[in-house]
Amino acid sequence: MVQDAQSTPTACLALADGTLFYGRGFGATGDTVAELCFNTAMTGYQEIMTDPSYAGQIVTFTFPHVGNTGVNPEDDETADPVAAGMVVKWDPTEPSNWRSVDTLNNWLAARGRIAIGGVDTRRLTRAIRQQGAPHAALAHDPDGNFDTEALIAKARAFSGLEGLDLAKEVTCAQSYRWDEMRWAWPEGYSRQDDPKHKVVAVDFGAKRNILRCLASAGCDVTVLPATATAEEVLAHSPDGVFLSNGPGDPAATGTYAVPMIRDVLKADIPVFGICLGHQMLALALGAKTIKMNHGHHGANHPVKDHDTGKVEITSMNHGFAVDSQTLPDGVVESHVSLFDGSNCGIRIADKPVFSVQHHPEASPGPQDSFYLFEKFADYMAARA
Image 1: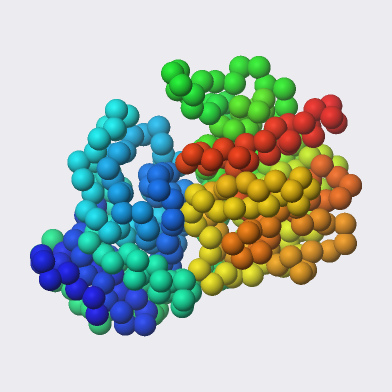
Image 2: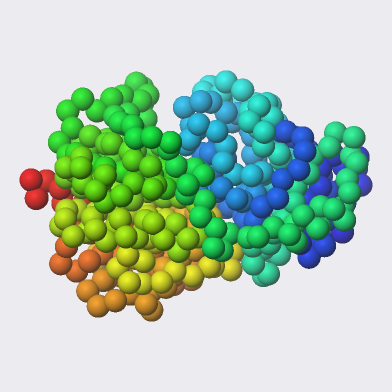
């Protein structure tokens, strides 16, 4: 048991193995249960908490300065936080940023998300790396009353993410159009008023900045729910189809998405996938996916492009990976992680179909992978 002796604990993090971490709660009160992961990014806590790919997960931030730039509505990747909770080393300070409109504490509380500060995140991160992503229960009570045995029992009862289809929980309820482009100084967000390519984006948990990058690449984007059929996708006569990121087990979501993808591939139009979309494209082509020990979550992951030899610094967020040993003939491994050699990209050798595991739309500093959106646009232009 790890306890902060300097103040009365108002939050408790209980792992399924019985380990307890005490700290100071902020955000909403109550408790939640999820898989516990860690993220190594130095910026972007608001984007991380609103990334739909984090559904079913509590995020441990290895960087201690979380909350110091406040929050603002422009940086949300979806309407509300999706991550179940957050764990940080230091309590959030008062924000100091010209774009801030509120504090992280108020933002989390208003959206029902629990957080704990004052935790030894280095010890916690080491435990996650060594033992794998644990199931955990996080509780916040201003009076410091915790039934630790009940919290441990809740953590042990959590089903985990394997076999879990979460895309249906975070996808859009109905189709919509998107024309907002990437943020730029000094005007901020602008609109795409002269699109060159019609794209259907299938929303398995799409981040807004992905849609902005598509619009900035000259795309007229129509977003469809995760359960869209191939007939519904192709009814829009798209020049290309985009498969978005998302949470959960790709094999579970693939039960309905893989048949759609296979039929879309028969239409012989460009297809581009990111993260969960990458994994499901691989499944549709005959490969398999596997659950990782602790996954990849951060903004500093080196990925090698086998086609060019270039190394890109990328953002990642995934707990499952494509098993490169199962890629069929004609499917080329295009990118690989230099951390552990896991698959980070595929392409069909003779078709304009490709996908990557990392997030080219994320902009925590490196913008090394923006070119992938231009590549998608070039494929569509070549077939116009």
